[in-house]
Image (cartoon, rainbow, N blue to C red; front, side):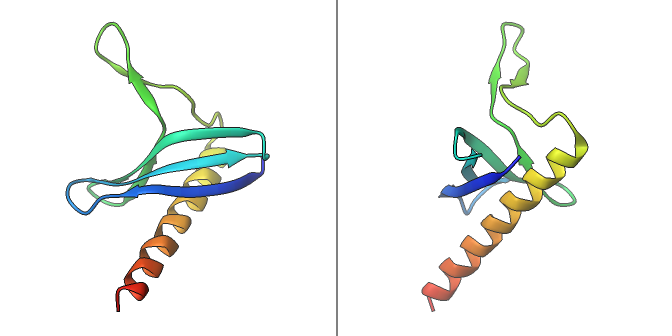
Length: 92
């Protein structure tokens, strides 16, 4: 898997939702509405989901292996941190 692009679409200041991200895989597949969420202990990545008939939220797309999840989460969080740092530098 080659994550060819990560775009920070929206950054939020209030609440636990910190950002909404899009990711491109192998210059062929785009995944939108990936969320960066502030958890109790750390920031984590939540995959796009929708509510099913019973009211439960189900991921629309998700990594199959822990290694793939780790790679995706690391790349997205690193891109988010760089984006926030650049925004803070620009405002000085």
